[in-house]
Image 1: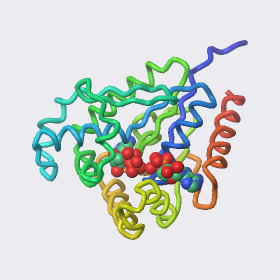
Image 2: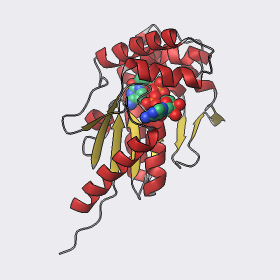
Image 3: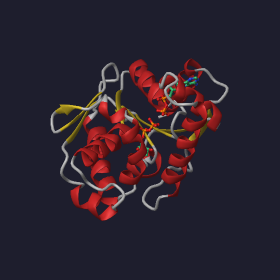
Image 4: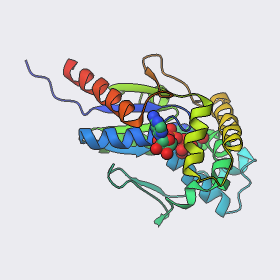
Length: 228
Ligand SMILES: Nc1ncnc2c1ncn2[C@@H]1O[C@H](COP(=O)(O)OP(=O)(O)O)[C@@H](O)[C@H]1O
Ligand SMILES: Nc1ccn([C@H]2C[C@H](O)[C@@H](COP(=O)(O)OP(=O)(O)O)O2)c(=O)n1
């Protein structure tokens, strides 16, 4: 008897600098799936809050404005996009100012509820399947995902990777301190903290090349698909 083929949903979670974005994009491209960067969505709403003079340290003020920004993500892994009220914000959401404020904004339950609704809608819309990366995808957003991956790496390796991107503008030590602070905030918040789902496969990427991580995830997805 044949079964209807369900679109494959891959959830990739983990802290900053573990390789979620690079791995997710490449896996989606290789397997012909859509791709959603949920961190970019939290950065986009944070960018909007900062630009509109909202005090990001005041959760009530953030909650009050949580429904205002129209955030739209393009899910083609070859050219992912993110807009706020129709404006391309892919550059501005990567500034240090946004990075410093994003954990506070994303801890506010009203913000999370809006983002989770958008993320689930994107997964439903991706008829051919999707790779979704973030902090709470396997635990909260898509608990029925076909495959769940939790990427880790040492704080040293993650900081070295990130400061490589910042091209020496910030020292590795300062980058590492920022990462560790953000990990603590993201893991310690009340609403859907950064956490490994019980049924996620943990992959420590400290000693792996990006290509090895991509291969590992592609293999896990193909094994799961074959067993369906
Ligand atoms: N296994 C790896 N080894 C070395 N560098 C990596 C590896 N995975 C990712 N990188 C690099 O580290 C940086 C951060 O990766 P990224 O995918 O943005 O991580 P995340 O989305 O988890 O924050 C990027 O410059 C990326 O090219
Ligand atoms: N599913 C998610 C994704 C990101 N966040 C929050 C917490 C993270 O510190 C920020 C930014 O995430 P992002 O993946 O862009 O961070 P990095 O690129 O790894 O530095 O957003 C979240 O709370 N839940």
